Image 1: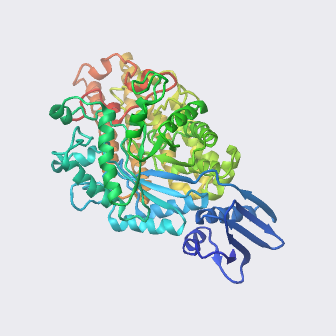
Image 2: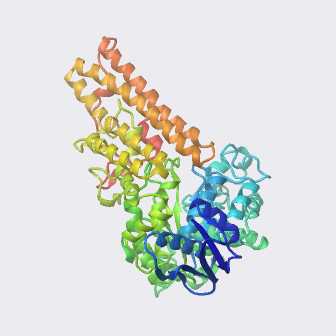
Length: 626
C-alpha cells in the first residue's frame, strides 16, 4: 500500500519511515491521500470520499492515529472517530537490571510498538546496567549500556514522539553495584548506601551524571524504594539508631541538591513514606493530619505511587488521596506482571490494572506508567508484556474500555491474537490456583526447577492432576504457535515448557510411590521417562536461549544456563541413585525415605496457589550458597 501524506507532517517525518516499514507501506505522491493536521485537541481519524484525515496534538498521537487509520481502512471503507487522551503521560518502565538487558535494536522495536499504541514515555530501569566511567566495576560483566547506546535509544525515541527518562537507584536495590570492593566505604548494608558519607554523594553525582547525560529530558527517576534496612547496618554501628523517615529526608535532600545542580527534575518511589499515612501514625497531629512541618520537610520531588496487587478500586483511591496530603497528586505505576516466574500472570495484571486506572481517572492522576519487572532472573520474555501494554494504551485514550476492544487493537498493534497470549497464564494458573492467580502462584517455575528426587513441592501438587493439565496445554500452545507466525519462537518456547511439565510435574510423586511399593520393574520404566525429561529440558533451554538472544545482550543468560544445567545434571544423578538401588549397591534411597511435607516457604502461607519462591529456595532445602 502507498500513502500520500500532506499537511503538518514535519514533526513526525523522521519516525514515519520506521513505523511504515513495519507495516510494509510506502510514502508516494501517487499514494492514497491523507491530510494531516497538528493542532490542540483530541485525536481524529477520518476516511471519506476517497481521502483520509488525521488530526493530532503530540507526535506520538500521530503514530497512534496512523495505526488506527490503517487498522480501520482494512475493515470499513469510511469512518470518522475521535479519541481523547486521558493522561498527560502514559508510559512504560522496562527492567534492564535483573539479568536481561535488551539490546538497542530490541529497544527500538519496543519503541515502535509503543508509538503505534500511543504510549509516550519509556524508562529503562538500570540499577547498575549503565556505564559510569569513574567506577569501572559498576555494572562490570552485567551488560551495562554505554553512553552511545543510551543516546541512540533516546534519539530513536524522539523520532517517535516518545520521551525517554533515566530510571536508576540512589539509595537501595544496589546489591550488584555494591558487591565490589570499590564501594566498601559508602555502603550501609549489602544493597543500601551509607547516608551522610561524603563518598556516597560523590558516587551518586557520578552515577546521576552518567545516567542523565545521554538523554534530552530533564526528568529523572532516582528510585529509593524498599530500603527497609536503611540505617541498620554500618550506619547503626557508627551513629546509633535513627528513624528512617529522618534518614530518608536528609539523604533525599542531598541527592536533590545534586539533581538541582545538574538541572534535573527528580521523581522517587513513594513507599518509604507510607508510615506517614497509617491510621495510628505517630507522624499525625491530634486532628489526624500529617504534621505540617514534617510534610514540608520532604524535598521537592514527584512521588511515584506504585501498586499492582489489589483488585479493589477503593484501595487505590484511598492511597492516591493519602499521597495528595503531601502536597501534590502522585504519578501512578502499575504492573504488567512479567515477573511471576517463567510466564506472565495476565489474570492479575488485568484485574489490578482495571481497578487502578479507574481510580486514577476518578482522582485526577495525570501521569501513569506500567512496570515490567524481571524479578529473580528475568525468565519471562519482555514481549509477553504487550497485551498489558495494549490495555494501558486503550485506557489512556478512552474513559471506558472492554477487553474485546483491547483484543481487537492488539491484533493490529501487537501482530498477534490476544486470546492466544492470554492462555500463557495457564502455565501458572493451574488446578489448585485461585482465579486470576491473585496470590501469584509460580507453578511452572517451581515444578521446572524443583528436584525430582527430593521433591520439595510434591506434596503441594498431590491430587491436582497437573501432568494432565500441562498435557492439554501443549496442544493449546501448539495451535497458538501456528496462529501467531510473528511470535512463533515465543510460543514454541512455552509449548516446550508445557511439554516438559506434562511429564516432570508429578514425577516425584510417582517415584516415591513406586519406591515404597518396591516395584523394581516400574522403576526401570521410570528411568526411561527420566531420560526423556532430561532431553526435553535441554531442548527447552535451547528454545528459551533463542528467544533470549533475539532480544537481549548475552550477559545474564549464564544464570539461566546454570539453572537449566542444574535440572539436567540433577536428573542424571537421580538416574544414578535409582540404578544404585536397582543393582543393590544401596539398600535404600534416603531421599525417598523422607516423609513429604508441604512447602512452607513465605509464598505458601495463603490459599489458592501451588507454590512460589526464588530459585535458590526452590531447588534445595540446604544452603545454596555461602
